[in-house]
Image (cartoon, rainbow, N blue to C red; front, side, top):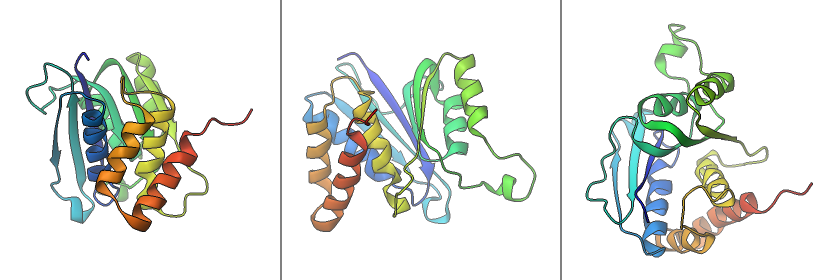
Length: 195
């Protein structure tokens, strides 16, 4: 496989660590060479959490150069736009969960909140394929990462990684009720939508 770099971003408590570890292990189960690194920073204070996953035969480091990622996965709109602007290459792929955890500058009225239109305009300007996802009946906000993962699988956004690889990765990391609940959301989302 040619190198494929994924930049994941969100806010502390949203599950970036879990989804990045699932991506890492799924790539491994698919037989690819893979490297990853997390930057937790202020995770427990609602700060930014970033992970990087690089897949491919010639990957030697998990670090991704500025605007060098093939795909951005974001769990929040502000983080989606920030990641698109700083990490994603022109013509890449962006997928984000449509929710907002307002940064301090927005709460203090020093900056405007990021809208879906802001993200769409930036993506269209740079020829980025973008997907905005949301789950209307999601009971537990901690499962937004599984909604994203289900869409990533359904849309086949990561070359060479199949449903079975994601499921095996989840089984590596989760057990009991937690595995059952996460797998349920993942499988629910990845089913084809009825016309």
